[in-house]
Length: 217
Image (cartoon, rainbow, N blue to C red):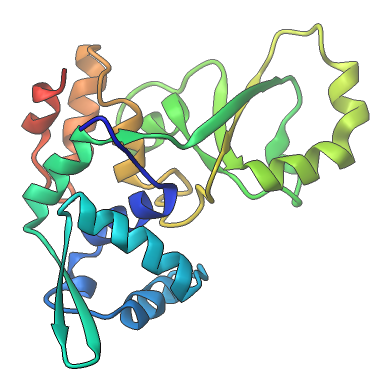
């Protein structure tokens, strides 16, 4: 595929792959909205509809009309996983390097990402520079409050990297880390043997085939 899946579309696919039992068989947009709400995230029906239409276009979701009710169902999860790996993903807008610990600030919602999350989810060593992810809107609010501190530390070697995301990376977070699906996608073309083993272990925990990663261009 040359096409990009939307950030919300990616979240919906991740939701299915991580919580398949919630989306077994047919479901409506209202059902999906309710399942997502139970995971402490609110999405409007119109926004969900646009994302699901895109997933229908990619043939990840299928639709069936029963009278006035438009019902959806997912393809087999291995087919969904393979198609997801073939799609291009755009989530990170920008990375910022900082010297002071942003985790101490309550006004920024974050999760571990990159090498940091991979070390938390596997037996890889913790990296020297910690990477965390937050939404671009939360980061902008945080920047306004902490602008003076950031200006005064510009020339010092960074201790933290903040990834600014289009969407909310805390949604579906696991072990205070980016959810396993998005974490694996961020490393899917990494050829480091230890990284590949770590990704394989993460995928096995969710009954997903890690050999698909080796088929990527």
